[in-house]
Image 1 (tube, rainbow, N blue to C red):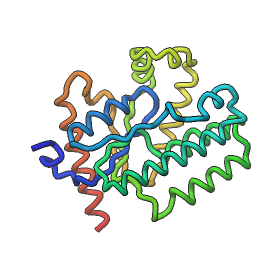
Image 2 (tube, one colour):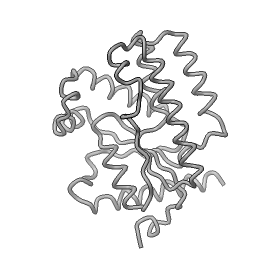
Image 3 (spheres, rainbow, N blue to C red):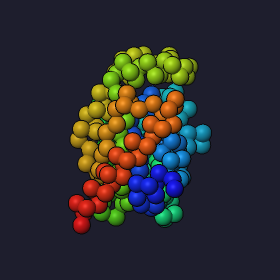
Image 4 (cartoon, rainbow, N blue to C red):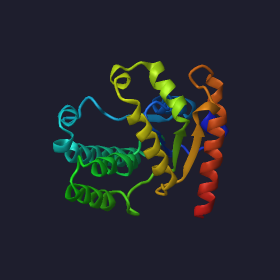
Length: 222
């Protein structure tokens, strides 16, 4: 018996993992998918035609990049639910508008007209009863110091060259976003409460919390 059966998690559930850079979204996505015998859904970065252009000129390409992300995430969400669920998703469609598009607008790298067009499109596509929202969003959180330590530990060159001020801002923006998020149920997990990299058994208490959370949510909907 796998953990999904043990804790009676529906085999059509869709769970999204969210959190700032360095909190371990990909690790959690893989660990939960393995524990529940679910499929994974990861962001396709290699095929993005705007990323290089965007990094060369934020002001010119931020709107194009966000529209591309919105379209790709929307198609992926549709695919997941048409498949019948049973997925763990790395990153959500909600973070793009609530954090990144908003940040570009506030910093002046996206015009007010472009930002309004983008948010209107996002609302029309996503914030409707017809859009298939996940059963649960798991928000991975930790202190800024813990996250900076993890970023340093994994040693990705681009991240090492990024000023600490940027990570501070992203940490704040993620906290502001999740504190006001209500598109689907949220389970918050502190990254210090488990260690799935070194202790495979630490995933089971998380699965148990997920099962309880989904059950309670479904009871409230009845």
